[in-house]
Amino acid sequence: MSPSKFQVQSSKFKVAGVVLIACCLLLSGCGVRFDMQDQPRYKAYKKSEFFSDNRASRDIPEGTVARGQLKENKAFFTGKIDNPNPNAQVESTTNEQGNTIVTSFPNAIDEFPLPVTKELIDRGQNRYNIYCIVCHGPTGNGDGMIVRRGFSPPPTYHDDRLRNAPVGHFFDVMTNGWGKMNPYADKLSAADRWAVAAYIRALQASQNPDQILRMNTNTAQPAPQTQTSPGGGH
Amino acid sequence: MAQFFHKSANNIARISMILAVVLAGTAFYVYTQVARSSYLTGRYLEKQQPVQFSHKHHVGDDGIDCRYCHSTVETTASAGMPSTETCMNCHSQLWADSPYLEPVRASFRDNKPIEWERVHDLPEFAYFNHSIHIAKGVGCSTCHGQIDDMPSVYQENTLQMEWCIACHREPQKYIRPKSEIYNMDWQDADLTAEQRTKLRADHKIRSTELLTSCSTCHR
Image (tube, rainbow over all chains, first blue to last red; front, side, top):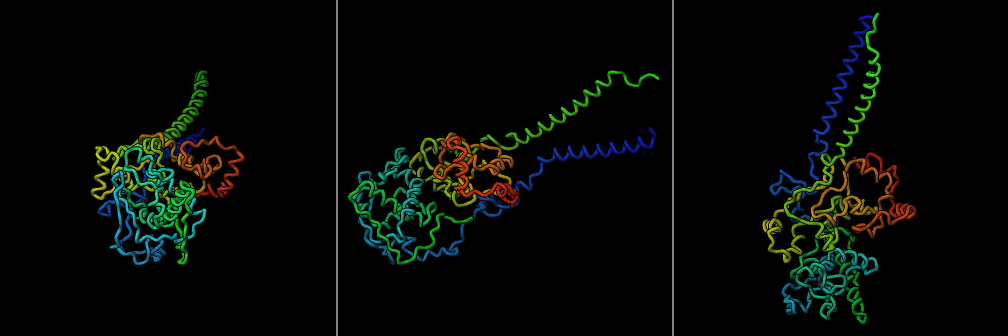
């Protein structure tokens, strides 16, 4: 073996050694850098150091209207008649549970502002079994799990007062809440609230077969695009 | 001339060659296992939350639907965290004096959100959308495990790419009928292979080629 050949081999080994060490360093370094993992952008619910309340998810600025969200169809979005009278006399009594219950509904519309189809009622059943069943119970008697845990029982749907109540009243209660019940407009879009109202009517008929199903519809005004999500943001 | 190496050097050379291979293999194996360990993936680790919220109680005992609180799971990328108002729907009356719920009442009083610790933290180079998985028949418990049996929620799976891609390669093995998405008791064995193939077609799940293309998740 000539000395020159040996020297060439030795330098090859040196290069190989350096590459090997570099690989080891690279491998051990893999766990250290996270700037691809945690990028300087906001994902949902991430904390923000920029905004004073530290919320990266911002509210829509007051007074802005998103495209197609003007809510011109008042009956569809409020469940109330045109030009409702805010000072209208509402009759109310107190029931045996101590809840104040209204017995007259001067401003509520009594017609569904969208066509009532089987799909709408099915959708209503689907939503009812998520959001309403917890208190109102599977049939609307007001005996849901949360009530069995001690929450104030809501009135049953199956008395003459609510059987004869205009459908706009149910929509209004879902939208704005009533008594111990908080509003559900953040979880149910307007179309979904009408679907739930239709399902409540179906429940009422199921518990009282003699009742005529009160599914009057008024679709003179075309119903707005029925989006099923409350936010609709993607 | 005397031999430079003793005869036993042959054995030493052989053994050291074998040892080198074994050591390299062991080192590689240890590396893969460390990378999959809960130390690095956060799997099975419970996090200290500002409120001692129990999914076992709310889902398992009370039977509240997942969507009551995670109400945007069907429509947006994020499943949605409940607002404090959602907690107060019930806790305005139930456990209303409990010291455990003071952070909730404080949040409600001061109009400041509760700062939950994120349990499932995907790397931000991976795009993930809950709604499409729901729409294609992936049930909650397939990824999140038996949430109804977790007093404190932990990450059930590694959330590593090999875990994602296992389902993207063969989604029919993991999907269920749409009516069973939120069913915590669903068993994968409830369907036969033919039913699964049909289900994949019914859900209009795209080809494995598309599901495993890079830009499906890295966009």
